[in-house]
Length: 293
Image (tube, rainbow, N blue to C red):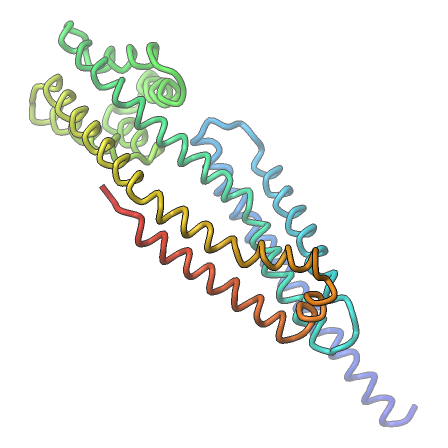
């Protein structure tokens, strides 16, 4: 074997070893990220009382990522020009990463809706606790009346709080865990008031009535602000979706005009730039119309 052949063989072995090392490193990183993702999803689902294996959601994320990657790679699976395949890998990989996080986004939406429903039920629970205290019940018995007289998620959270008290967890520790698990600002206000009243003394019935009035007024203002900003949010949605709908429509009705453009470097660069700018515009509009009450 000539020296040139030996050099080519060594270069090939080196490139193969480097590719194998990079693939192994990527596989380890993906495995660690998937493990952390599964652990976080499991904690979120457990806090929402959704007894769904987190591994199944991770598997759905991988399936969605693989499907999106294959579909996104179809327009780029060609040898000419030379930039098509590498660019396709970058674009398809970015879309696949977004699809992998889709189950997490859905669970986040469900958790936010659950928290909103909990806040609405809290307006009913505070008068119930106040009336129970006026009738001579203890604070634990007042919580029991709430657990029996409300629906999920309030009944689930309060029942878990009472169960922790029965197994020996301290009241303040269980109350802090209750607050942390729900993640509601309104509940934080209630828990802080209960903690201060039990440590320093105070009329909890009046405190609960005052907190209920405060939450009710803040909810009313929040709904008013949401109504006033509905037009801005709708405009942001329309402006964000319109370019993509126009592009899809042109690709369907004028494929001879759109497909050569989309399969060119200028077309891909334009599509990426439009996506980035629309995303930035959507974030700016969301920042403007989001008003904390």
